[in-house]
Amino acid sequence: MTPTSQTAQPLRGLLGRLADGERLSHDEWKRVIGEATTEDLRRLADERRRVLHPDGVVTYVVDRNINYTNVCFSVCNFCAFYRKPGHEEGYVLEYAEIFQKVEEMLAVGGSGVLMQGGLHPDLPLSYYTGLLRELKQRYGIHLHCFSPTEIYGMTKTFGMGYEEVLRELLAAGLDSIPGGGGEILVDEIRRRRRTECNSQEWLDAMEAAHRLGIKTTATMMIGYGETIDHRLEHLRKLRELQARTLASGHPGFVSFIPWTFQPDNTPIGRIIPTRMPAEEYLRWLALCRIYLDNIPNMQVSWLTVGLADGRRGLHFGANDIGSTMIEENVISKAGANHKATEEMLVGVILDEGFTPVRRKADYMRLA
Image 1 (cartoon, rainbow, N blue to C red):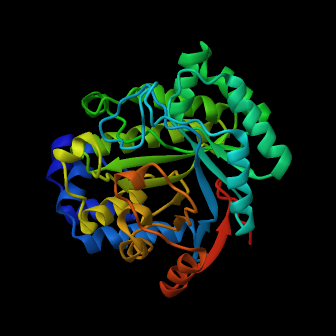
Image 2 (cartoon, rainbow, N blue to C red):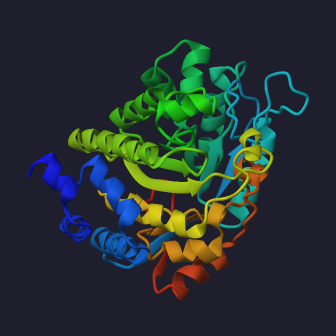
């Protein structure tokens, strides 16, 4: 079939090809997100979820997001969390403070920590490795730490390569890596948003982690001025990296989490003051599930869209509802103030007709 005839194919034909598991061209995906009904997208995504997860389980995690520092030499204009080096509001948590947070998390049945922070120019590598080693020895918990952007920052600060840094962190107790800092993996938009780490550097850090057998998650932040083409390019890059990783025999990305830009207290919030409508988010959640058919899990971001729409996402391809978020200090400062207990998440999962199962950050089920 020629490119011209593919472009002219009726929408119903494109949806049928997706139902059969076929891949589409960029322009065809663009037509699908622009022209398909929300119900068509929901149905296709829900069927893909059923194929990948026929047991009807929806997973969740009880953990704590510990932001060990807000000092950052990047000045992303969508972030309300960071403080420049030398700022009076900058902080670095002492180990004792982090231990206390971990013990509070364990007291409510948590299984690990998600630890992320700014790109601090002065912390030594021993701060990171010593912290991981102490946490693993003291508590034996799962350590889901340091986004690709932070790994990039460490390479710049310490003059090391990605694999060198990652091997040091692995030896100290690192278990898996979160997908923070992905936003949109297209440099056109990343330059406008003053993101320090470019798209290839983010992808290179992830690929290095995958080569070492480290499981990671991936994210996409939508609604901060990017185009549909940018979003589709982001998905293409992730899918292609995952295909290379799987071909090499490693698990790579174990989950994908699309979430929405939160504008409060951010520099670009004056330009983009409104949040993405739930309908648009759910359509993209569904498209992500269909597009990223080689990433096993899809998480709905109830933290940014709220539980009312988060529960709807369980019928738009998501098989995971994320974390209870015992603590969260980054996007909450930008206005994401939704809260949920474990009981609330379990109740939502049951109400929507699924079986709740607790997991670790690497998606290993605990029950």
